[in-house]
Length: 285
Image (tube, rainbow, N blue to C red; front, side, top):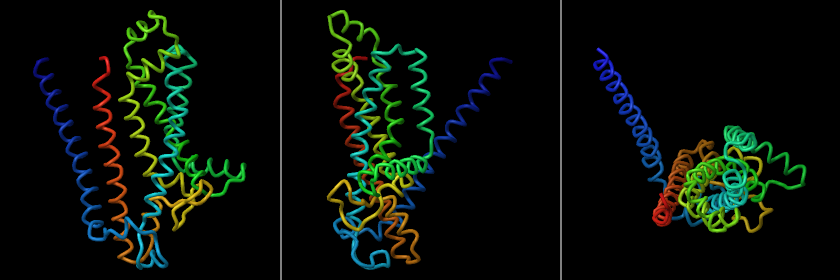
């Protein structure tokens, strides 16, 4: 009777896994299919190589080069800022602090809470900081808001991959006379490099696709920003504004913009996977 019950439970679990997998794959196909079917006909070279001309959002000529460049600059800057803070936090929690101490647990819990806060809250908080320091809506403001958004995610992801570094490897480094700093940089960080790269990629994808955090902080401009203090357009906001128009041709351009955004994330992910594969060969397992 027990063996029969175990077989039934196993069959149900396998069926649920297949159903879940099918739902995920179907969702991906539907999303990508919708974007490609509606966006590909409106995609043109002008959209990628030109900035909006007068009346672009009324259906006239131009492109979204300003949003493409703005998104890359803003998200790239935000990711760099996040790396500066996330990697030291991850190394401190696993090399300097006791891994399971109350202090380390409190930091991890705080990062988990910050990870779950909606992006619009980060946008509002960033806007308040900008008002306090006299910074107007600009590329810099957007970078700071997105950096606040992706920092908890990046820090927790890096923390988890650094925790996977074999403890014996760290002890061997100490036994050879290496300091904690040398062990953190030359051993832990090197061994965790593939996972660190993955954390950076995940954060980049999260940041470049967010609209709420940059709505009040980055502003919007039809020009490519030449200064950190100038407003910057982003692809999510460009998609939002184009979908909000009553003109069908402009709405079609919104789907084309979504296709471009998806392609950027895909290219970055593929490039990152290649880097992970390259450096992962040197990891001690």
